[in-house]
Length: 358
Image (cartoon, rainbow, N blue to C red):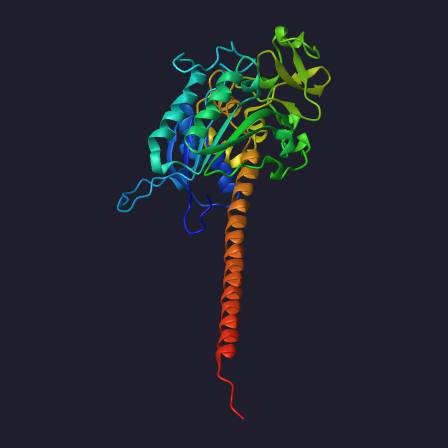
């Protein structure tokens, strides 16, 4: 996948604000986007602003153009899988948002010889529940039919340094029989949440919890109508912060506030520069930049992609080394066979030499 002679080519479907591209950038891996598909115009705005220097609008030659992606990433809409939604499911032809996953299958099928080496699908944990498992299994069978080997695991953002309890299913399909080994991913200790939060005294009062419907359920547990106080880590970042189930920060003296847009972006692994670039092309709606909350809630934790891509890069180098080692072994074996055969011929030759007469 990681050819050091050229940039990694990615195809982003349901691309959001470009979490995988951010991960590749953070790792210093040159990247070329074959295509980026996203229906949310405001998310497209943020993406274009974040990667403005990498998206030059210039004429390019198409002679010898290689459009084969190394990686295809799709995080199809989760609303119809999620326990927070109506769980309508993703049956093909049902026209639910989550059923768009089958469009990815059709796209890969039509690629034929240009199929990507890796296909990464991320979604909520509920895709493996007994109500949703049939489509999850079918997805894997469809990938197998096209020559892929699948593996999946539930990954928690807390295992990759972020103080956010966010569990998501990552299904990684590899073309050509190689199985992705999740147990080889590099995990990192969860960082302190203080590194991600702004100072309470510097956060404007507009973020204070003032709605009675939220204040009266602060500390309530076991109910959808609850507002959990953030302590060591945040809970799953959602598309809105000012509705239940909510999570709030205790500022002391009876003041509680919501997470700011910047804090939500940080808790998904984005840099402050990423956030500021996105904010520059968005408008405030009411009290907040609602589009920025939505984009953070729909995103994928950047450090998880970083760990996945590190593993892929290491695997590429290891395979190359093993091929070189095997070639060397084959050469040695061949040399030994040649030497052995030469020795046998020499013995036979000597046996056939006429003895000198005395």
